[in-house]
Image 1 (cartoon, rainbow over the protein chains, first blue to last red):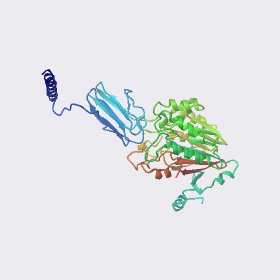
Image 2 (cartoon, each protein chain N blue to C red):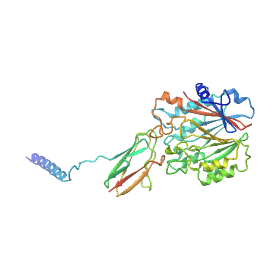
Image 3 (tube, rainbow over the protein chains, first blue to last red):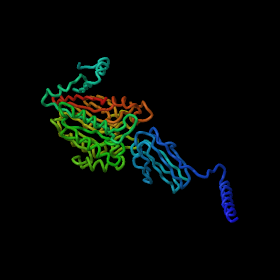
Image 4 (cartoon, rainbow over the protein chains, first blue to last red):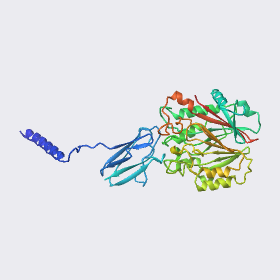
Length: 114
Length: 306
């Protein structure tokens, strides 16, 4: 009896949790995958990425040429990323973060954090 | 075969294994097939080798290991009947400046059969730290430890320039005020008949600005060299052989020892060509230069690994 009661409590808690999540808003996913910027053909894609505060962004280099993800204000720097290497940065403050590649300065992109 | 017309050029190129020699005398390009013996008949003549863009650490479709092809290039140099007087490395030693990569390059080049090797940096040598590591290794003996330098060899004046430390927003090479001032003072006392050889990573002429294949203030350097009767500019960076003659100045870019890059504008971006290794071997290699001080003639021979 006691066990059944606990099980019920767990199920009940689960039901309550689902109900709460359902109230988040239309289309709101429970788990948001880390947005990823693809570095390919000497370009960052997307060139402008908009994310909510607290998001961790991942960059992955798909070129055989190394690239970097270097903030123009010194806020973050990936070091050299060879083919297949990734870099992650969590954005904890709102703002517009411009960055470029230290090897190929004509490669430029932005992360907008709201 | 002193003058070359288009048909003659194509016939010459068919002799692929021998190597085509381009010589500049008084600004007129001529070509003839060369054998090693030619370099040895004149006592004042000497030869040197240019290698470039060794990109050790690179692993890609065109080459599974850039260190292997670099070793093969070193073997080619060591197989020359007359060792080169010295070797010039025109930059991009490593691919990603990963830990140990600079050491690997130094280790491989230690076995080159030559008196000395001179270096100028490429952007891959300095992008992580603004040149700190590169200059700590190769700044000794350069002007103020900044990487540029000049030396004389058998009457020819060699100038190594750095055009990747003032890299501009458009990705262009740049020399900067301080180096340009030094250059003017360095060549000032020389007589106009002194043969000049300039070596630097990024091309000193506008090969393809859209890809950063140019040096924004090169015109000022070339102005300082205009009065000289024989100027040869040896560059790298673009991983293919291109040549241009402008008055008494001959420009030449070397192949990489690691992988080729596409012809200007022929691909979306200038990265490594994605071609089979066997094809890439015919597009990587080294450059051998023979200098005949009398007449200020230089014979430039590019040869591939495959």
